[in-house]
Amino acid sequence: MKKLNGLKKIKTAVFISGQGTNLNSLIKFSKNKNSPIVIVKVISDNIKSYGLNYAEKYNIDKKIFNFKNKTLAEKKVLKLLQINKISLICLAGFMKILSKKFIKSFKGKVINIHPSLLPKYKGLNTHERVIKNNEKYSGCTVHYVSEKLDSGKVIMQKKVKVLKNDTVYSLKKRILKNEHRLYPAAIKKIYN
Ligand code: GRF
Image (cartoon, rainbow, N blue to C red):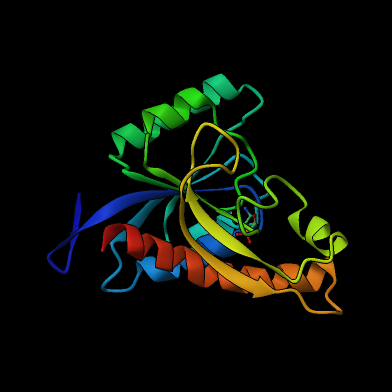
């Protein structure tokens, strides 16, 4: 385990697929003196993921895995995580569903951020559905990953008001800003 400022930091891997703005906020958070985590690996299933640039910028080792053969990819990822003594996985816009076997072998150590107030609006296209249903509120949730999609125990949530003129884009943008604060806060809650 890495020792910083006399504290043992939790070795963390962040899994991404896309733009990686949550990864960016987690990296910044991890640089704080009082952060309980240190990010040692960034894992992506997509070579074109913009988020990989953040790994590069902050000199964090990044690895890309082809999930076409999911069983094989997971096997390789698991090995990498074990070798590097990773004890927390943060899913941050990771678009592949991890197998039950994988989640079991990392039980209680995989967390995710989802752009809705779970248990409402599990799955994809949350903002579209929220707007279509004229919801007054939406938000974001950090939760433990269980074997059922978007169904594990909630760690923290942030409620966000849906405005009258909101589009999918404007709502997504506002919720994303909140996500960037919520993910670090949820990690603090777990370890402090
Ligand atoms: C976020 O809205 C997150 O809640 C969801 O996917 C999006 C990822 O955004 N799971 P980013 O790649 O972190 O910018």
